[in-house]
Image 1 (cartoon, rainbow, N blue to C red):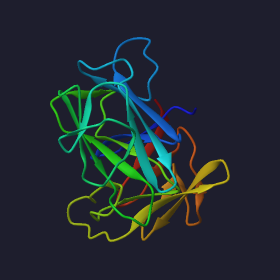
Image 2: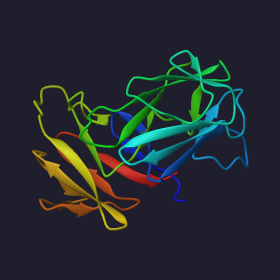
Image 3: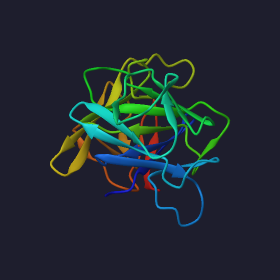
Length: 201
């Protein structure tokens, strides 16, 4: 399974972009091979989240509750659901828009991701980076700039493409670009409204 790549957005934060159909969550310690690691007292592999069509299914290997209900069997996650692992680590699952199967996982408790992240993104077939609340990754423009556009990621074959919609000054490094472009590790995307880099974990 491909490991999550890290999206670094200037002035916003870092996000794990999880492209696998199955994403594992567990404790952060050297040698523990999970997709999303948390610095906290949980199992080395506390749960997995599987993509099932446009939904996500969680299977727990450690005591886990969803909105206060103990998880007895695999369950479909609903937008806004609060997950508690081992009654210590608290996460929130969000689907910003039902038009996409992509979801965001936020860490609510005082624990931290390893490496440090703002959130984890469970990728479906598309992903929106933009200023609106229905964006999967909300990135506000610099002060004084009124931006109503977005960066739209979408699957193409085995890879990903990106299209800038109303993104003035868009360039890859120093090369201006207007057409959709392929997302690759190490890519530096710059614009007047937001700039970001995609790297390996």
